[in-house]
Every structure is written in structure tokens, then in C-alpha cells.
Image (cartoon, rainbow, N blue to C red; front, side, top):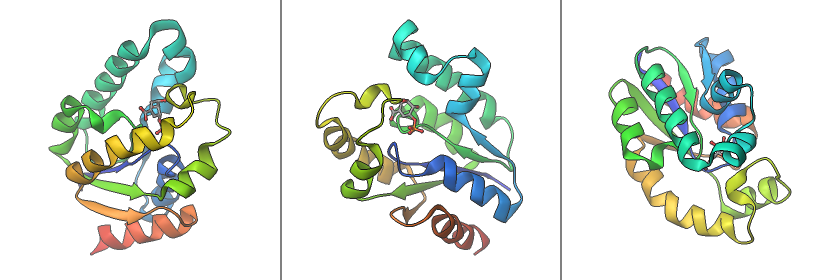
Length: 164
Ligand code: S3P
């Protein structure tokens, strides 16, 4: 089976939903941010602080190349991963891309006190980035599910799409 890629804005639930979906479909789950954190033994925040965003984006791209070489996995990408065409190009070939779409209100509630995500440390950053990215997410994804519900509900709706 093709890889199932979960994409969407920070806080949309990609990682949590991915773990549930992995249990439902019995397919291994990979989280690209966690993979990078384990490999470097640093948090994403520390990587941004020490090496800058460009270096993080290169690490992210290398991870995309690596994981595109196998199929039958559920892959949660970062909120910025598929904004870069080079990542879409390598992943798209053997993947179904699912967008988990949340309202601004849901994202704001989930992210307002977040200190771990380097790109959110400025006022109004959520709205500005969301407006910029949403058309791109929609454009590159094969299916869209609403992410404003519980992770189990969202995972079940993705499982229904995959099984049909
Ligand atoms: C980013 C999203 C983060 C992480 C990094 C950059 C982005 O992942 O990759 O902080 O550009 O949207 P999550 O979407 O899992 O928070």
C-alpha cells in the first residue's frame, strides 16, 4: 500500500491522529519531527536556535527522501514540510496525502500557550501563516478531513477514506 501522509498546520493533530490511525490500520507510524529530534538528540526548537531554519529544512528534506523510499507507512510531516515543493516532489510519488484541516479558533486554542514551536513566537503569527499555507495544503492533498474533533474521531474518518 502507498504511504499515508498526514499534513496540516501546527496543532491540527497530525502526530496524535497518526498514532491512532496506526493502531486502527496496523501500519507503522513515523513522525518526521520526532525522527529528526532522535537523530540529532536535539529538539526542533534547539535546532532552529543553534543552526537556523534553513538547516532544519535541509534535515527535513533528507528525512523526506529517506521515507519516500519505502511504502506502507503512516507519515506525519511538519506543518512546513509540504510547503516546500522539493518535499512534495519526493513524497508524492508513492503516497496518499491527507490534509487535517482545523478552524482558526481550534488552532488558536491549541497553540496559544505553545512555547515549543519556533515559528509561533510572534503575535498573530498563526493567522498570518495559516492564511498563507492553507491554499498550498489544499492544492497538494488528495483528501481533506476536518480536524476539530477528537483524535480518535479524526483517525476513524481517515481510516474510512483509506478503506474505501
Ligand atoms: C513547523 C512545524 C513544526 C516543526 C517546525 C516547523 C512549520 O511541526 O516541523 O517547528 O513550519 O509549520 P508541527 O506541525 O508538527 O508542529
